[in-house]
Length: 151
Image 1 (cartoon, helix red, strand yellow):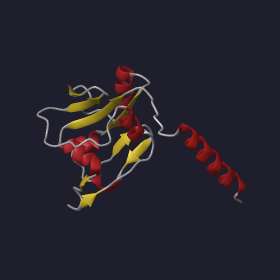
Image 2: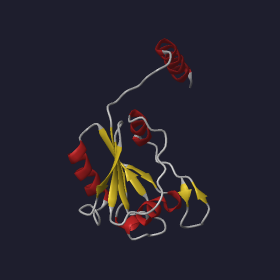
Image 3: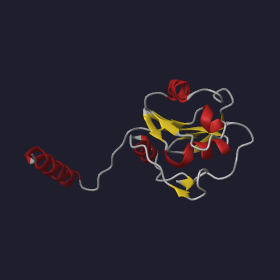
């Protein structure tokens, strides 16, 4: 969520996928990003801390290359959300890319670019803590039965 560079109004854009789940695995529900970096940066989000890292060598690269390089550094238990050259150049309708998903409404990638923020990398171990695992299994089976019985 942000203020849209296109309209100046509140903007909410979604991509689906699993970036948010990995953020939760790292122990965070929301990241609030304020201000602007003096040079290109990315955030490295981990359960125990968040680090601001130099992204100068990533600036100017497209989202596919940026993701490949960051996955190469942080491995399979990580997820990346990043911008490409359009976001860096503040094109008002720039998107954020995470995996093959695109957060494209309202110029949210432009806002990342305006902050000098190339990417957010979440590194965590997969974990799912259920309050009532037996109830979860029961409800999952019930939903599966309902779906399979529906024409």
